[in-house]
Image (cartoon, rainbow, N blue to C red):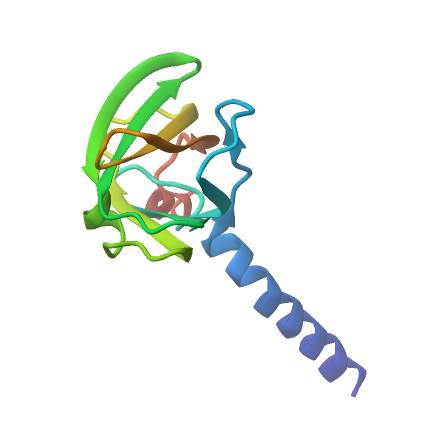
Length: 155
């Protein structure tokens, strides 16, 4: 009977840990102290840890007081503090447009190339509206390990 209680407790703990392993909520910082029109409420990266060669989804929960008809996301990536990559995305391809006042989610999925070096990265995302007015600017850190996720089982 005692073994069943221990086994049940371990199973319950495992159920609590699995969501933490598969997705990570990441600390987000604003680029400066400016009061942005779009407030970022959180970021989730799935799967986490990020593996090169695998599709990764970045979901940004945000809110706005005014509708947004369109715009773009400007992404800048730094590796150990050195800028290495920039790309632009149409806002309406990352969320439903027009964005109504209230809560919304920006979701971007991307597969990192197999040659992506392991280490510490910083991503800066700027959101601008159709008139190029800056709506928000955030940064967050993430890392890519030395081993691909599928190779960890072989070690």
